[in-house]
Length: 200
Image (cartoon, rainbow, N blue to C red; front, side, top):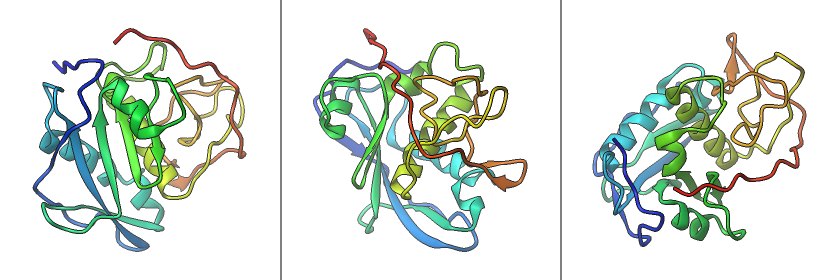
């Protein structure tokens, strides 16, 4: 079971092991994995393995042919960092004021809120494994230059760049940028959904 304080203090342990490049063509980006101290039940190695498994799925970003992604080992250069952070540290890393609920990308920082990693969201319509794939692919998608997208129609898969954490708007949950073997997207835009308040 994953346990965490509201505020872990903002220091991180980093995965020491690197990984292979995932994908066969496209620009190579290397990422570092960090897990905030104070989180128990998942460490940097375990979180890094989970992220790498998501990227290895042929429906993830490397499957588009535009990107190759590789986990950096200790002492290696990296292009961005994927953090698993407590809710209060999420707000520090993301900027933009009080939130504590969502995950984000801020520059070369991708932040997965541990509350979402541990619990997902109510009413998502898919299991926690799918939600975890969604949040990693969505926030990494921002680092790859993608903006928010809208639901293309009732009953259709939600684009991975839709803010599914805040609402599906008639779409069904979808954690992947590739659907039925093809890149899948909606119109650019975002909804004015409120951010839920949660006591972690």
